[in-house]
Length: 116
Length: 207
Image (cartoon, rainbow over all chains, first blue to last red; front, side):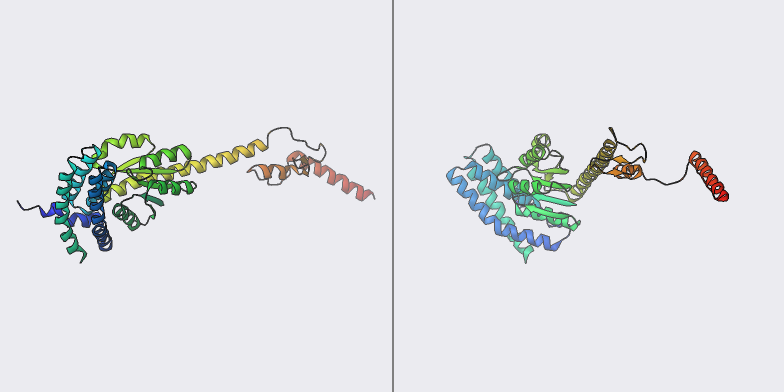
């Protein structure tokens, strides 16, 4: 089944969140495109060394950023990963991390379209 | 109105700060809880509204609330905590730590505006009450200054102040209270004065 485009990125909701300020929308899209690779690297590193606190923090921040961008799937999957890390279920983290990466891979091209 | 925004996620901080600036608030952004606390410690005189993310490095939002209430119990500050939907169960702990209100991330602009208006109403009310208390305090101080034993000259009615100078009774009271004097002559003194004038006239006619 094809992913729901609104779940990947709800542009109308993002428009409402930013109060119709195109400059603000561009700025946060640019920030997300800059920060996201570092956050994913931090999560991968934290899973590799079993650092639950670092994984919780990185997943929590990505979850918050995705929530403001109205990227529902990335938000949900970051929340799942954060939940694994917070509860110390690091054995479940690699699967949750891969699901998150897949969602991010779907989101980034949509954000790049917006930033053009 | 000054508003402090504290969030270690720069996207969340930017959206919140920019939304508040669109509404013409004077916004300062702190990147973590320790920076937020330092800022709040430096603005104790002015009414301040702060929107603090719960989960931040160094000091969490709830810890900032606790420290502000403990260290600055009289500061006129309205503290709002930001929490994610999954952490809504921590709201009670946040309010008990000293927060006045909370918002779920990502905030809804209309709800944010309404809750900020509540905060401004509370801050304004507290500021007016503080002004009123100061006015009453000043009034009480003045009343106190007019209490006690006052050395007064039985002849000229001057009063000796704490500085040992003798001052006319009107000046003494006017300096220590909101009372002001309008000068006139009372009926007994007016009669006395008339008699004096008559006596003076007779004396001149005789001479």
